[in-house]
View 1: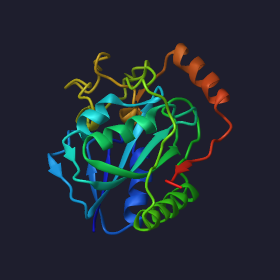
View 2: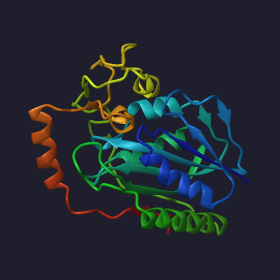
View 3: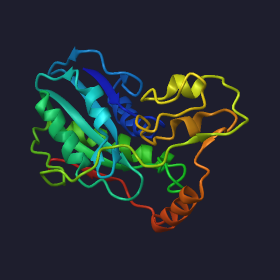
Length: 250
């Protein structure tokens, strides 16, 4: 059996859970579509794919679905995971499950995983080692169920899906200590950062804060009073940790 983790993960959070599950099931291969679309690939019934994507406003980020769309299954079993910042995953798990089914995959189980939120200080450090251990145990249980003939995984959510799946509303800015190293420009998932490494196209930025988290001199960030006020209130609102939710067909 060939095992894959197919992920869109700007800050690495969605990748961690999906990779923990995939690697628990065998020698896994990573298909990371964060910076570019997946190459066209057709998987067989003997393969297993773990999908991972972030939740944006209760939906899967639309750009993640676009970049994963070249992947096609042929009755290929898969595990579906979405990662959210401790608010709610709403219709995202259902949406990603539907997406996989439409492309010939057979979702055998799904998970809604809590990760550190992009904004504020919410569930900092998650997924923890304990979270990842839960992910690995879940993947093994899901695979055992599949081999035992269990089917019919039903994720929570509603159709039509709620509005969402778009980028956030806070666009980072650049401080004067920027060294123009090019890291943020080259690593921006949407190509929103200009050649000068300073200017950011607000129409393309999805507020993933990859540039903020990766800047070696901390030159990127949201420094406005509006953001600081929002982040403080949002962090207080979501301070109580939620648990990962795992869904099996039984």
